[in-house]
Length: 386
Ligand code: ATP
Ligand code: MG
Image (cartoon, rainbow, N blue to C red; front, side):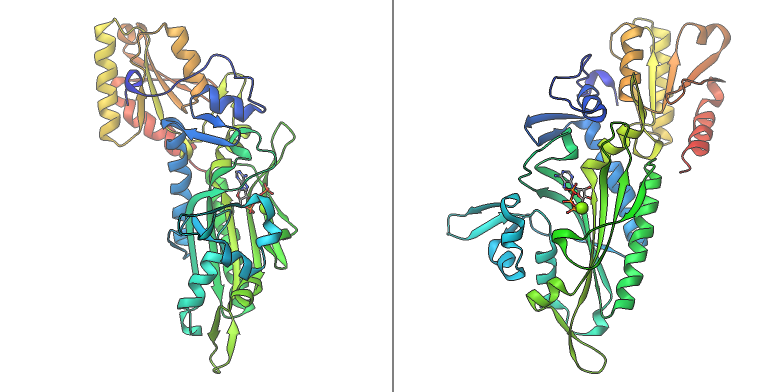
């Protein structure tokens, strides 16, 4: 991608609305913009990070045996009355009436919808166990939206649901999900804690939260898993015939990850005064190519060649071809936090060495042009390990 053609609106100063380091950096690095309190647009860099986060989640969920589906955002209030959560959820759920007079709501979570699906399709123990998940936008009219995407009214969640014939099955799926969550957060470069928690409104007996300690002192919950038991299946009548022909309520678990909140959590733990320091797997680009003088044709040809070589190798790179002073480019580079910078200055042509700079510690590596791609691959391989 050429920076001059990209929509990466960086800011020198943090807007007054920004309350935390991650919130400031997400605005300054051009990842998000606020439409109104708790409502955000994700700009191209932000969306690239979301895509990377989702990719990791999908890989780990699929390898734990879960299947992806997509449930509707629109739900019926009647379903929430049947589960008994209509009152409990209160004003958090956004309700409205459509032109046919149907009483609807925007999904704040999907236990009801998925249990209804199970009720109409699961008949026998032979169809169990089953684990389904989706990645989707949720709506919650939060009392106090804050810290940008950390507590928003519209946010992206990965929610998974397990269905089992007995407690032993639930335990197995719960532990599988717990393990998958730990892999997911590790791959994202997060230091996190897994703590036993109160199931609260969700119900059930056992639950674990995944907490990410932040410098600001606000530990932001990035995931929450629950052994729901039969709370929803009994309320909605989702039953199956066991191997002795007896009708039993299906045993459920539910497993959530705050996809959009994760971006903020990753930045809280991976930044310095100058900007973001993306962990490799979530970085919007892996390499940033900086020719220091765009009026120098030789330099731009070198940059073009490197850009083409990296594209061939499928290494996502951003080429800063903007007609800006080198100082501006270096500042922006630190702000948007691409893990590796290739700096093409005049010296490159004097001694034939290309300079590589690692964002996280500003360590410089030199390599000749011929071995550049090999060297980058080596650095990526050494560092991409969680
Ligand atoms: P919290 O305790 O932060 O209010 P919750 O317990 O209501 O969250 P869950 O229903 O467990 O949240 O949702 C699963 C995940 O979705 C949470 O672990 C969190 O990462 C994320 N999440 C919840 N509410 C929001 C929100 N308003 N904005 C962004 N992410 C959210
Ligand atoms: Mg929670």
